[in-house]
Length: 195
Length: 209
Image (cartoon, rainbow over all chains, first blue to last red; front, side):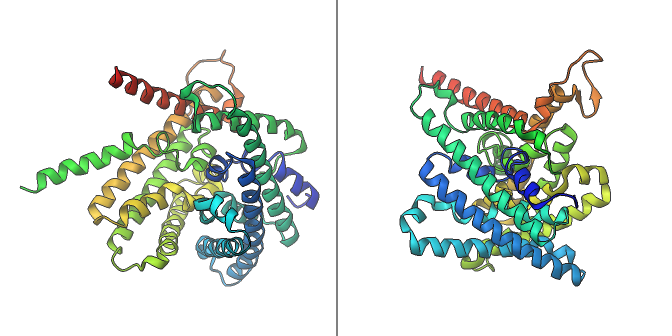
């Protein structure tokens, strides 16, 4: 992994190893908030911001914990950091855009349990990224997550206008759509796949 | 006198998690691990058992502590307790089966953010006595494992032509590679959900007629 440049990490994480469509991280908000474009965009931005903060903090934490031989505390420490970052975003949003705050509802605090955010922190540790690589990775993750969310919201807005058999409504249909999107994203596979 | 109805309700609670409120197929919770690790039935089983263990331990402990945890900080407390058990499982799996550990990778640690566990803790264990919480957690865990096996089994059968590593179709079978790739996961889960929605619809129609 050492030879990957920052740009490569970013592009791979956005496209060929997209967090949602290739690694199945963050599916709950992906299926829950992707109904409308106007909530999908801020949700993507909020999650990206939390990802960036979580990535930076967990990088620092990991250095600290490794220094003191406390690796078994890693998971608990990461979760605590992510929960605080989400709290920060929540307060910020409540102050500056109450309407948006209400629209996102329960999904905003649930960013804490978004596996994409914890996934970013865990994967960057597992792959041994340095600081710059971690930033590129988390930025790529955020952009990739937002991209998947916005694409999905666009498709689902169109679907609301079409005539479907009643059994198809709900999660089953969303999953089928996600499968098709994922199939499309596999076309980027030639760029290279991060493990 | 009182043990008979208690047992009956316990049985009901157990079955609720396995069938009526199956976490994967009915409530559609915990889908990230459900899709990511189910490329084979063996991985699915390992993941299911690990999650069940965490679920039972954390539900029982939290149910015992439910009078001592202040409401304001409950979520943080739950998360820390769950994370402790997940760390435990992480080390156990590493010790027992290195192959499984490598196959599941970071997804073992991601059990922490599995919505099923926090959901069960918040909606059931925090309000009920330890025994009831444990039975409920066991039911949910079994239901989750069955859900994972149903996904992993189908994906392994079509994607590799085998089940638990045993070849099923002989030499001439062309594996559908797409099934073990990410899109296959979405398709198979989507089809299962469709199947269950159809069952529910049919039952409804029959009752209506």
